[in-house]
Amino acid sequence: MSLLTVVSRAGPSVRRNLLGQAMTESVRWKSDDAQVSQPGYITKRKGKDVQTKRRKPFPQFRPLGAGQLKDEVYQVVQAPKLPEFHKTVAKSDNLVGQPVEWNPTETDPLRIFGLPKNLLLEFRLLSKPYSVIRQVTKDALETLNKAGISPSSNDRWVLTGKPGSGKSFLLLQTVEHAIQNGWAVIYIPRGVDLVNSTTNYAYDIRTQIYVQSTFSFQTLQRMSTVNKAIFENITLQKEIVLEKQTIPAGTNLVQAIEVAIQERKKSGSVASSPAILDAVMRALDTQTDVPVLLAVDQFQALYGKTSYRDQHFVPIHSFHLSMPRLIMEYASGKRSFARGAVIGAISAAQSTNPLPIELRDALELDKLDTRVITEYDKRNKTMIGYTQGLKKFDVPEKLTLEEAIGVFEIWKGVKAFGGDNTFYDETFLGKYTESGGNPREFVWNGLLSNFAP
Image (cartoon, rainbow, N blue to C red; front, side, top):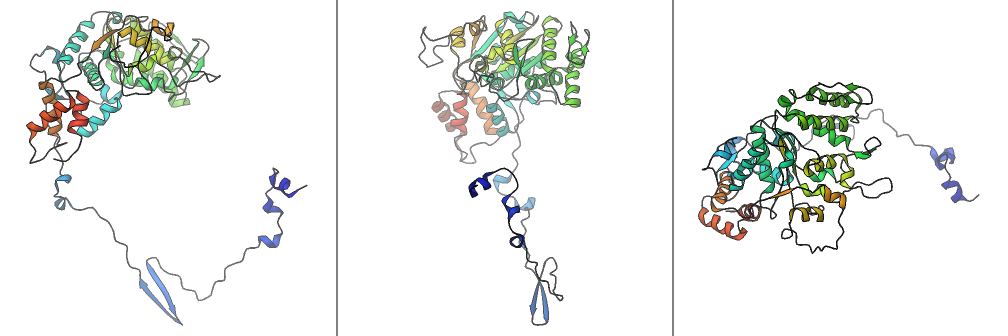
């Protein structure tokens, strides 16, 4: 047997087969009159004399006192005090171009459901959520008010427009308006998270789809937190048969969701969350006391390719995943709230999830999508069925002068640009002209292009 064979064999380490004399460790010799140095001191021996002196201390870095921080960069900028976003915005004719602020409560959708990344970044720079009332804001809120008395199958819109036109801001404004006017709100700020394989999934034999238990549980938690007062007055129409228990009919929605929460606390499992979410949504379908708003940002991601794979590593269609399928059933009118609306917003910020052909054809967005697509390109018939009845709600690609002034005043108020010697009129007109009035270009490539005056 060769040496290589012995070394590569599984079994005892080669080190154990070495001779004992090779493993002997020498013991360090210690003098009887050795002096032990004290912490912070150095001990030196000169013959029989021992000298001890203190080590030189390391410099300590301490924060400067408040009186020494006089440079402008250290000064705290007071956030501008602006009118609060109020539920009567749709009825006021003189608010177009008016900058407003949000003061989110502990259960506000903005805080509980979250925000798209671009809005989150802006609000962090502003230190507080602000927005501007546009004419399209009034039009959208008036349409939403009318939708509150009819089934959601009659009001299924998709906010469309050029990249950076403010679709996500408009969707957030409709969500805040709905919650202030007593609606039940379900807000999905990042639709791409439903299809990018960031949460676990498992095949359910009963429903023959892939259930997303973790995302279903998170959605239940957020729905219950935001709409707790409303859900306490809505009950289940049918009992929910789970693996270990049955939730009887007549249980209010808060108690039904609490079953999923307690299951997570006790066993760490969220297996029952998809079934409970489906039952909660069916209870919302039939009740007529409160209108329901289902709002989804990055809506186009639900109709495109997903990152999920089956056991053969074949991509799973979004209509075979529980959460995208649930939303698309409401978007297509296959399921409907007795009172309410379904609103989506497409986003060009997700380059990995471009606008699908089926959704582009349904909304007639040939001018928005620059890709060359012909009638010979393959389309999914099942996906086409989930686009039926969707209506587009165009968002203007340019800010009017009044609206641009409102945006300018917000960023000027937090001192994000400019200084004592800045000519603000010239700055505003220059940046507005350079951006062509596009909201995102006006802010990011205009006002925030540099922070120097």
